[in-house]
Image 1 (cartoon, rainbow, N blue to C red):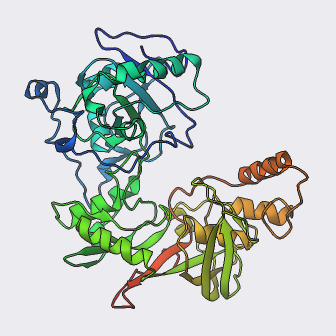
Image 2 (image 1 turned 90 degrees about the vertical axis):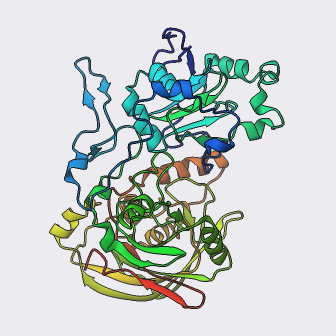
Image 3 (image 1 turned 135 degrees about the vertical axis):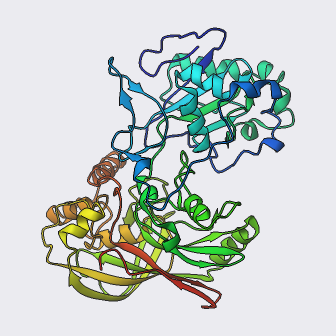
Length: 483
C-alpha cells in the first residue's frame, strides 16, 4: 500500500506494493531518532545482497560517474524539473544542476516484497530509473532494517502500518535482525548501489529533491588548493558550497570536487565544518586514520582558527561571551546571560577597522541579499580568534551585538527587528519578563520568526587562517571576496 502524501489512496503496481509512510516537516527532513552518519558498505551488510541475476535490471548502474570540470556551464540549468501538461513535475536526470532548489520532498517507504532497490523505488514513487540511479549516486537514499517510530503527526493509517511491520511476531521471522536490538535495527545507512536487494520489512527514505550546489560546477578547484601532503589537503573553500556534502547530497561537495581536481582515487575525509555561505581554509584528510588524528587535535584544542568578518556596524575589541541554545536547528539563539544547559560561546575580536561597503557589482557576483540595512557607506572588517566552535557562532554573536554580517539574510533581519523594536529579542539586553511559560514560548517563537532564510551563496565571513600543533602547521586563504 502506498500512502499518498495528498490523498492517502492505496495505489498498486503489479506485484510490487510499498507502504509510503510519513513526510515530516521539511525543516526536520528526517526523524530525530534516526542516525544519519553511517555509510553503508555492501560487503558488511546482512540485509542487502548482490545477486547476479538482478544485475540486468540496472541501467548502467556503476559505470557512470559525474564529471567535474573547472568551469562547466553545461552542468547547470535554470530549471530543476520540467512540468508536464497536467501540472506534475517530470523527472529526467539530476544533471544539469538547477540554479535553484526544488521544494523539499522526502518519501518514507516500507518494502513489502524483496527485490532490487532501484526497481522498487521506481515503481513505488513513479520515478524513472535513471533519476533514481542518480539519487543513489548522490547519497540521497537510505535504508534501515526496521522502520523507525513515526512522529506524533502521523495519521492512524500510518501508525497502523508501523505497528504491523514492527510487530514482534513479524520481526522474529527476519534473520537479518537477529542479535540486534530494535534501536540498532532502526539505524539508517546509505544505499550505495542501484542493484542492492532489499528484503520485506525494510524501511527506505528517499530524498527526491536533494539540496543542490550549482557553484560547484563554476569553480576552478585546482586554484583553490592551498596545500597537499601525504596526510591531508588544505582547501580554500568557496562560498556557496558544502565542505563534505549534506544528508541528501554527497556528490556536490568540496571533498568530492577537490579529490577529483587532484586526481585522487580515494575520497577525501571531512575533518571539520564551516557554513556553506562561509569561505576559507578547511582541512580534508586523505585517510580515516588522519581524520581521527585531526579530530583529536580539535578536541584537545590544538587547532587555532582565525576569521575575517565583515560586519554592518562596529564591533568592540575584546572577548565576546554568549550562551547558545542547545537545539540543532537554525536560527541559533544566543543569550548574553547565563542559561542553564546552554552552550558557552566565546570569540575574541582582535581588530575592527572601517572599510567601504562592498560595491554593487561584487554584491551581485556573490548573490548577496539586501536585508534592509539602512547605512551602506561603510562596513567593518573584524579579525576574530574563534575560542569555541559552535555552528553559526560568529554570525549569531555579532548579530546579538547589533553588528550582523553583511549579506546575512538569516540573522540581519532579526538584528534590525531588535533595533527597531527593543525587547523583541527575549535573550537580549532589553528582554521583557514573561509571566508564564506559555508567554515565554510565544515570545521565543515570535523571535525565531524575525529571522530570515539561509544565504544562497555568501556572507561576510572567511576562515582566513588555520594552524595546529603550536603553529607548526599554518595555512592561510586568499583575500576575501569583498576586497
